[in-house]
Image 1 (tube, one colour):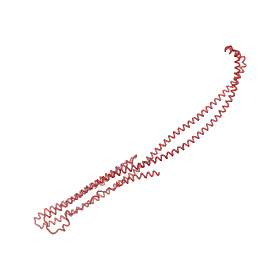
Image 2 (spheres, rainbow, N blue to C red):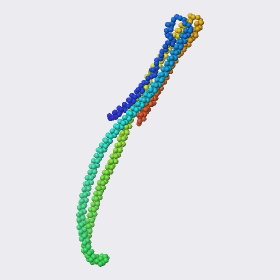
Image 3 (cartoon, rainbow, N blue to C red):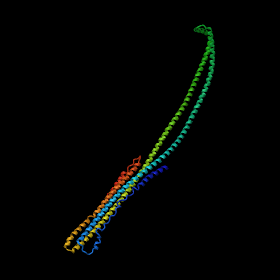
Image 4 (cartoon, rainbow, N blue to C red):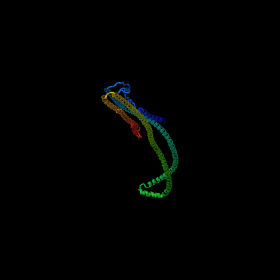
Length: 495
């Protein structure tokens, strides 16, 4: 349990490291609108101290050439000032664009380097976790094998003791039966010995009769030496007839002996049958013992086979358990990493939205400032127009004191002043339009930059997902990033 808690803590540290590595990437970028210098206020140097002109005029009557020179210098100075301002603004916009491009390239490089570092860290953490898990599984496997070996030894000992007890009981029963059969065999042997003694007595009697027959035959041979066998038989028949009584008596004795011998043979046959039966029973007992031994050996072989099958089943169960535990742990890890990555994506989305909102507020402030500067410029133009009107009225008053030729000469100057005033009225709109156009360009560049950043983030998150998800299919977060990018574009469209 302690190892599992340590592993879970190690796994939880991984996404925290990823978040810590991605936080510098997700910091709000410096808005280029803040770098825009404030619009330089128009100096009244182009027209000279126009406000001080009415008070500083001395009572003298200038000529028409001087008035023309004054109007020309004032118009040329205002045009030069406007051109200079426009050039400075264009130069600043160009510098800002170059700075934005350089910042974008640096940020993309930083993002790539940080994504590579994060990928290496993740690979190292995964390798460490797998090695630790492998060591733990090996240790657990050793413990399980030792425990199973101890259990198997105990089971084998109990099985051996049980089989030994059963074999002892069977052997005792067989020994008892064998002793009983041995007793019966001893009794039968004693009886056979008694019958054999009786048979020996009968054999002695038969031998006596045979001796008597031999003697009779010798006598017949002595009587019928020179006769043929048939004559000898006839003679023997005659002699037998003569000695019929003796032979009849002997035959009766022999018959009696034969009957006794038959009885003895029958008894001997019975004894032999009993002996054969006892031998058969003994053979059956031996066969039973042999069969019991064979069954015991077969039982041992079956027991060994069962033991091997049990070992194989135990190994397969251990492999299946290990695979199941690995699959469960990988599923839990993938779920945790999925949840953490979803939280990370949510944080990235919230931070991106906050950053976009801040940039929107900054852009609004800049546009408001530009409008204020435009109003100030228009107010200055109005002041210049008023000063020009005053000068024109003053010149007309001065010309009224002169003759008609001077009036004819001054009228073109008035027309020129009107043209200059009309020129003064029309151009102030151009700086505002240029500023608005520059603002639009900056906003578009900001949108493109935000889109690129979001694509980079989506690529890094996709790489993380593909690296982490090995067995479980996880929905890709790219559409969310694209939706966030499109949302940022829709938010920034008013600018």
